[in-house]
Image (tube, rainbow over all chains, first blue to last red; front, side):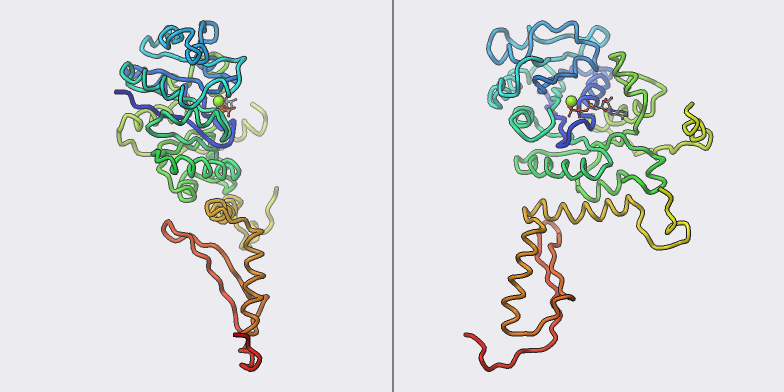
Length: 261
Length: 91
Ligand SMILES: Nc1ncnc2c1ncn2[C@@H]1O[C@H](COP(=O)(O)OP(=O)(O)OP(=O)(O)O)[C@@H](O)[C@H]1O
Ligand SMILES: [Mg+2]
């Protein structure tokens, strides 16, 4: 039986798709059979982050409209052969998939995979309902910014109302700002939202670099965000991994930043 | 921005502490579906009712929503200056 996890947020642009891609690759590296479902119809990006954009033949919308079965729409990763993407359409819009149709597809896939990860679009409209309906539990991604935390709380309320368990990921933390008292840290966001945190991911230039290449940072050895994502993967697998303190910049790194490298 | 208050040891909150406090406030209202505007209306109505019986210190008055282990409470702190005379009190 699969574990079905939706990655959602409230506010847009906080790192849902990045988190989905990294979690997917990280779980696949551990030998799990994983499928990632993109539900951001019309604004798909998960294919790009995984380097699979040129291999898409059919999409979730074709599956919903019964032109093909889901197996024909799956794109298999070349390097991680137990990792699959079920892409969505870039031309249709969110109304193309009803929540009940999504539920049927997730149910049909449940015997084949260890993990089904669903990348949710931003907002609380139909796209949200479609993404969330089939999930056993949810990862809420937020950023250490006042508006992103408020919007996360709204989504958390929604998820609790539909009896979904929730874990939090705080993304794009800047340890230097936390140290200076100009950015919320994980502990205080935890206190405000009262949801268990399973990850704090630093803001890391390598995330952008990795998106350029279509290779998620979780497989990069020299990336602080990659380290954080590897820990999240472990925690999703049920391991007890203590939180490491995020490193603020050293004096020399700061000097380098001030003078623009 | 350069913060003089902090340089000279003044008691200004860091911006992360301010964010923490402001979020706590706004989320109590978001969760209860009670906007600060409605709180203002409730306050004015309370003043009207209580003023029939007591003379209250409107400036010192404070009403707020508070979170107490999963339940939300409406907490009012209303300083009373003195009781109004019993005569003419409405029943
Ligand atoms: N830890 C990080 N460090 C640096 N940049 C990051 C980090 N996480 C995400 N980003 C960048 O933030 C942007 C938004 O990320 P992403 O697309 O994953 O967000 P999203 O929540 O899926 O957005 P949307 O709501 O539009 O679907 C991207 O440009 C990504 O590269
Ligand atoms: Mg996205």
